[in-house]
Length: 120
Image 1 (tube, rainbow, N blue to C red):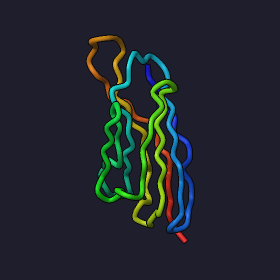
Image 2 (cartoon, helix red, strand yellow):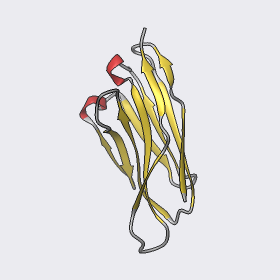
Image 3 (cartoon, one colour):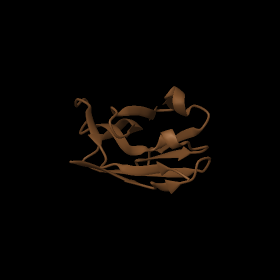
Image 4 (cartoon, rainbow, N blue to C red):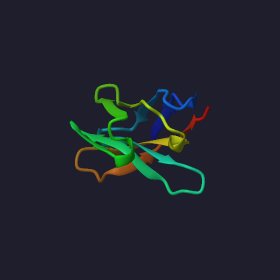
C-alpha cells in the first residue's frame, strides 16, 4: 500500500500565495513521477503540474505562477502557488506513479485532496 498525504490548502485572497505539500509513504521501490491535479465543482479533474526526474510539466493556466519541486530522498512533492486567482479555487490532489519492485508495472496513487479557495 502507498499513501499520499497532502497539506497546505486553505483560504487566500486573490494575488496571494499558498504552498501545498505531499508526502508519499508505504511500499515504494521507486517513484516514477509526482504531480498535482485539481478539480473544481462541476468540472473534470485536470493536471496542474508534474515532475519526473528533473523534467517538469505545467498546465498553461499556471505557467509563471506555480512552481513544482520534489525531494526524491524524502518522497515529497511541493507546489508553490503565487498570484492566485479565484479560478484557481478547487480541490487539489497529489498524484504519484510508483513501482513496488524493480521491473514491476507502474501504479498510480492519489491523495485525499486539499481544498484551495481563492476569495476576497
